Length: 443
Image (cartoon, rainbow, N blue to C red):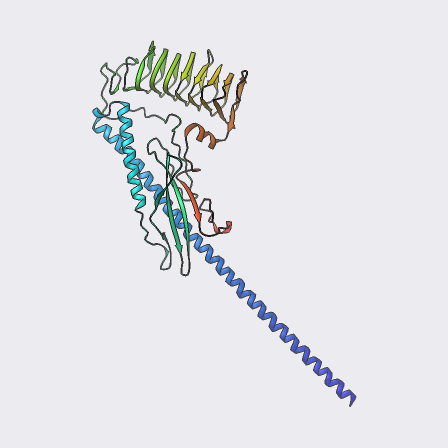
């Protein structure tokens, strides 16, 4: 009887243990299933958010590219309108003043047309995958206030939608106001980059070929645009004169050229330019000038620029593509912007005064360098510079390429291309941003 009761108890314990194991296994399976379902839901939600971000970013790139293309079309149309007007009615645009006024009118008209075009962008759905995945502008683009008079800004509101949800972004495009003398890179949808240099602080690369038809000067150089038959600069006033070979300018002392442009497709050899005023001298070759005392001069030289003996330049702009050599009596600048792009520049002595800016792009030797408290000399940080400072002179400042472009040429506020600023109504994580789109985002 005692043995029978012991076996019965053992069977009961076994049954209870079995039941406990079954409960534990079922509970574990249930918990694992719940965790799996929860994780799957999280994955689906994450994929949903990624998909929405991708769709909306596609919309951002789509409208950015469209705006870039419209800007380029408008810029080309403005340039074509200017060239066409000068070709068809040369008698109306035979001075630089008249040409500048024409350019200003065409740019204003182009700006108005571009703004009208952007403001009329449709809010229709743009399908990504039919029938439920798409993006669109939730409102027509509109202009917003800008703190910089050189640029205008448009705001775009973009919505990306899939089957269940949608995501809203807003972004601002920043456009240069100028269409002429602007280098525009392709839209480059890979990363949204480009490079816009407006040359507002220096001299754009000139066009040394006169438009067709342009008449010969016939010995007179007043209030006209013409091609000079001889090779000597003389008695020019309020005119644009093309010289199509090597040219001389001797004994042009104390001449007020009255805002004339001398466009020389060849070398220039000039002497005794004392007291010259109000002239653009654009040389597609080497330039040699002795005794140069100039005020309000725009000087461009594509070759070697040799400034010999008594060089004093006031209120002017200089851009030298080749090296500059001034070692006999040196150079004194006053309220002048000078950009030196050539290699192995040599100036001795060099006085930079009265709010002047000098930009040096490559290896240079500057002896007896004096920079007063109001002036600055910039040099790209990779360039070799040898100099000796005079007493109480400031030191040159080394800067990177981007800063050099901004200070010396004039560059748009965007890093490259038509600028873009983007903000979102969602919290953006690095994982939700496509590598193909480069922008800053905030909540």
